[in-house]
Image (cartoon, rainbow, N blue to C red; front, side):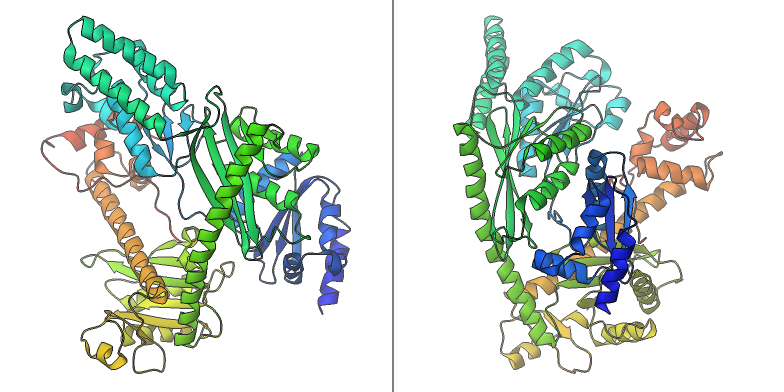
Length: 640
């Protein structure tokens, strides 16, 4: 049967073009399990279907699961690189290298395209005319740096909406920390001259910054403005203190540079990036690739390392130079440089170190990779031990590497929502989180709501099946979940109910360290109880708490959106479609209330007259009222 499948694939591949493009390998359920790019599609895909002795163990497993292969043609190999990275990000194929960060690293964004720029934390880099500095490893440090720069260079810290709506200077101006550009107390040129100091600091041109601050300090002292001079003196010392915390690689360099190296064994590979900005190391970043064994002679580092670089710079700042620990050959060096140029709009060079300083930097990246690898593996092994304990105590057939938890949230009988949270290998897999707005249930009916959610979830055959589903509740909720799984034809899914204990008797009987969580299994009257300090307990309670948090956050957002819609109901000229457009654009009453008329009028189907009518209705007699929240105005997502 397998032989017939391979022969059928070979027959199809013979018809593939010899052009560049991207190929998509699918499983028997039509799910994309691998995405690759090729200069010659026919030749590249045919290489997977040759003699198995020429394939690595990982590739053999991939080939055994391929039932269909499709392709997308591209004009150039560079386009194939760009398309591959975007498709991997969208489909998250099982056998591709996947950069699964638990968090996005922060950047400092300077909105240089604005007349009066400001600094704020950003999690992604966009082509929007702004300047980005980073990435940094700590959001706390970024906020501290922004506060320091705002205070030192008197940069506004208000949002654009507040900036446009100010009629008089705020308290920040009154205490001497802002020049109040919002009410035209400073010219555009003078304000940008101040911001230039912050830009020079972030670009690493620190001697110029310190010299400028000292010149202003002396001038203030000569003019007998001693309080101003004292603040500038403190600013000089603060700048010097920040600089002392950064390792100097090359004080004469003004280039942005990343150095990338790796370390690993049969347990996986950790890739480390060291970020050097203007000759100073500002931080490091780690990515663990569990499917790569760099010591396996059949794993070509040129292939997977290039895939890593392609994916990494799809979402991150592209520096002037990227120094790597693998000589991938001149053709791949040139190709990757074209890919980075296309992404960033500026030239970026891929280098293999030949100078002493370059080799020292790669050695630093390698040492960090080794240290972080040991730390990651140790933590991962703890997680695996916890999952193994769950497997044993719950009588599962295999280690529960994918666990899903669902939470139903209803507020005062109003709209019901649900959350789906996923842990993979004991840690959150946030790209698999889903939010559900209940569509078929009226009133409060947790059973019907959960049935709708599970029916919708398991209708998606492209999602991996969970090894375990955690239901928040005791025996009653577990019985309901079992009925639901039976009704939707998925009795094969393992389910456990998690509930808080009401008495201490269970703990005394089990003779374990006290915990207030009990785990109920189908067909078993007594609950399973874990030690409260065990890794198994942390994983299971952690996913329940995360599902609850995720559902509550979604519900809060919907309530605020409903509040905005209700305030718009009385405005003439606003139908449902226009209200939805305002909702997506502004997200909250406060954001819309402080918007500029031109900003509203710029929305499709709106005009200046309607914009002014909306603002008049929202601001008329509104002194002292609260809008009930200031949640972010990001879009609301639900299942596909």
